[in-house]
Image (cartoon, rainbow, N blue to C red; front, side, top):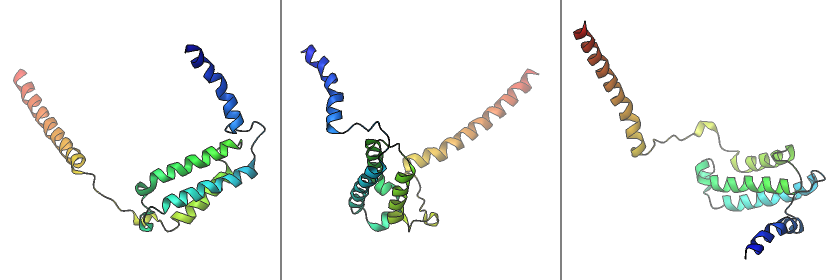
Length: 148
């Protein structure tokens, strides 16, 4: 049983090489990269169809999809021996941004208060600390006057 466990890792590099998962060592194949990146864009577009169009400017609505998209572009770029990000990959990502987020502006930021369980301590703790420090200063002032 132990012999099998020791032999498995030796086959892993060979399996990765045969499956084509390893990046090329002879440099960046930009042509293949440009062929593979649209798959990531198509998958992202399909995922974004699940989000209402009016929510496309709210990152919290699609952050998981965007993370999958980013990871996809990184993996596809690395598989063809290119570093990520590179100018071609960045250009592709920028086109995707223009396609989905061209109507998003900074002017339309919608601020929301945090939940009450966070907001209440953020308000009460500084107030209580201020009162406690003021009380400590008064107490120390009276205590020092008695010593003199």
